[in-house]
Length: 560
Ligand code: FAD
Image (tube, rainbow, N blue to C red):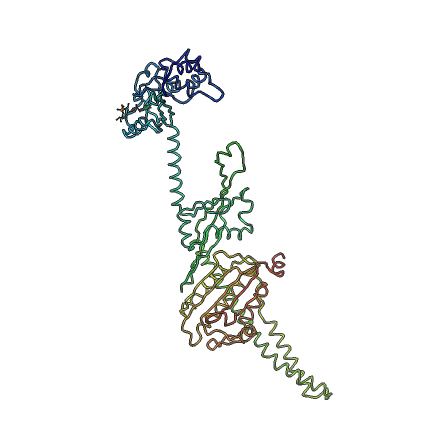
């Protein structure tokens, strides 16, 4: 567009008072350009306002000619650089150069300006006193009426402190991330929905061991069980806790070495709720409820736990040996009572017949029979009285995964001696049931012992034992499957009768084991079932179900 006298007049009018008192060295064309800039829809902004705004702006502003010679610098520029105005006017902007900014940066700056494009970047500047600072510089060409570059407008801020802070934050972040990542404890950060947003290396390792299962979910589920409350309920208010112990199972632990806690990991867990400020711009003025994150820290205490378990297992072994002795005595005495009861019943029947016939009451046979019966009753009574009583145990929460491990630990020698391959498929996190711990151990041991006996039967080639636990509806289930000779359907219920024994090899057994096991299961509100042969390929599959909701007799016993 050609510049006309008319245009000059309009500009002069528009700039009004600003033209009457222009800043020193500020050329007319520059004022024209600014005049164009301050045109608003409602008219023209008084130039004095514009001039004051530039002068007082907290950002360092300078205007140069196209060789970068300074024509104008505002107060902030003078404050920031330490120069007086007269020391700057007419000097190249390079007066601020600390001479360490790479030449490529300047080349890029100038390439943009020559192409009439603005440029933004960071330079290292020096003040009059020689101190240096980081300048976040924006330069833009100011075009004349005919589209040619007439001036350059520059604005810069001292960003040294911001840069230092940024670096400090970045360094701290790197440091914290490295420490968290390398920490031997497992650390995970979960969002409010329970999704893992961050997990350190120890967490990733466990994730690999769990073959795709999310460790945090298992840990939280196990914690919910231990603490008797859903961890995510009331999350926003955050209930922190420290050092709660839980156990989880690694999947598919296979091997003859069943003595150690193969596949079980113990963790001491702490949970801290972290308030996260909302950084969304829209929420700047609104004090919305803060977002909560859950910091989960889990320390692997498996080794210590294994040592404790070893001590406990030894104690259980001793206790179970005693219990077995008691069981054996009960079995033998019950057997004797049972055996005696038959002949006595026959004698009693004979006596009843003789009495009904109205034979002489002084008949020596009747008298002898009566005497024998009396002696018999006394003997049976004495034997019953001699039956050792079941030892009373406290009711407590029992984790059946632990029970399985304990039983396997006790049975290690037998398993190894018979070359049995054990396959464990334990539920990664199993809720506890209420019960008598040692009785339940004896029960599971009975099932395992039976399976080992079955694997020792003649003709068994593959000796494998699969023990699995799972949550099944409102029950905890343990299944024990062997690759022995199996059981004919006709015996599926008979085996629970006293003195039933179908073993070819283990003939010495009295046949009370499953009877007592069923008694224990029933007392705990549960059941034992031998699955029909057509439901699996080989051997025998026996399933024990124990309810999560303890039966009345157990809760009553506990509340006594
Ligand atoms: P110079 O020889 O001046 O420049 C280095 C390179 O820049 C040259 O090789 C050339 O490629 C290019 N160049 C320089 N002048 C021109 C030109 N007139 N036309 C085309 N290309 C050119 N520098 C700072 O260090 N700090 C600042 O705060 C700063 N602010 C500036 C503000 C404005 C508005 C402008 C236009 C420039 C600014 N500069 C600033 C750049 C400054 O003018 C110098 O280019 C720079 O400081 C390097 O100076 P030098 O003496 O080391 O090298």
